[in-house]
Image 1 (cartoon, rainbow, N blue to C red):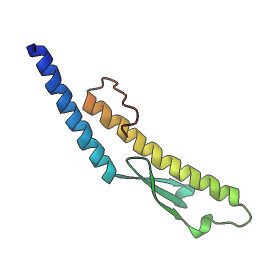
Image 2 (image 1 turned 135 degrees about the horizontal axis):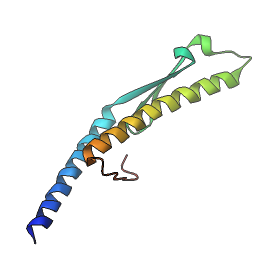
Image 3 (image 1 turned 90 degrees about the vertical axis):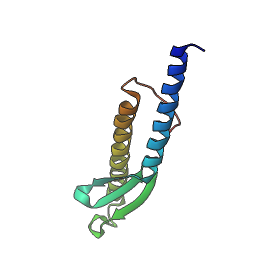
Image 4 (image 1 turned 180 degrees about the horizontal axis):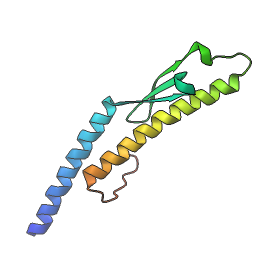
Amino acid sequence: MSRQFGNLIKQAQALQEKMLRFQQELDAKEFEGQSGGGLVKAVVNGKLMLLSLNISKEAISPDDPEMLEDLIFAAIKSAQEKAANTIKEEMNKITGGMGINLPGLF
């Protein structure tokens, strides 16, 4: 095995360890999104899974359920976008901006 190949293997192992650590950290992170000026708040984890949803009484109108649906959707989407942006930024740091895309990792 050449020295260059050995170095490449070591770099790949180090990258794999960083990715695993990052994935574990993401499991513990929470990202909050809001809509309607804070009337609806959603929290997702680093896997983009919904952890909690808080709906203010002021957001509930029996005459307009579509508005509440929109507020809920917007809050969840906001939280997921925050998480996804953080994941993308951190992945770029870990991979040195190599643009490595690992589908299904997160």
